Length: 221
Ligand code: E4P
Image (cartoon, rainbow, N blue to C red):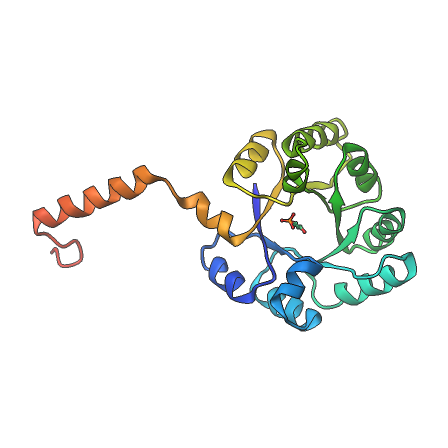
């Protein structure tokens, strides 16, 4: 499973890139607003740090303007994935950009029917939002299961399932069990993935016991 980091915070991206575990970045207008940064400059800087896909979302909602914005964003760097909303105009833009060889991430997906449409429009990624469905007492992970199952029925579908709106490590583990291709994960949840109390206790015990030996690996002959 590929891990994208779901943030527009450049410091977080720089720090997490050092783990060697980050395959891409997703941003959205809300995250860009939180960053307080100039959008075009910010996306350019992220693309210099991250080799994999960097999602940059259009701001308009009509076909003509979204298409122009998408082409402008795609010109920033080769690894831009233009993010478009799952609307009729958004999917028209998806088809046009995909036909030109530009990566497209179709966002705000909340149903299997929408995911099927995005695949037919040539999306590189479909972004179903699990957390926002859970927030409404609906089953976000069941949507991932449905989309993975449907896509697997059609070998000509190349669209990758990008699990979005992730709130916890459980969303990632369950999506990985279902075979979702990508998880886009907030920095806080990436850090949670490392943690287990038995790891902390076990390491503390090993460090204490090693000190009893009085040895040093680096000083040993
Ligand atoms: C990513 O592409 C989405 O925009 C993001 O995961 C949405 O997450 P949220 O529901 O926590 O805002």
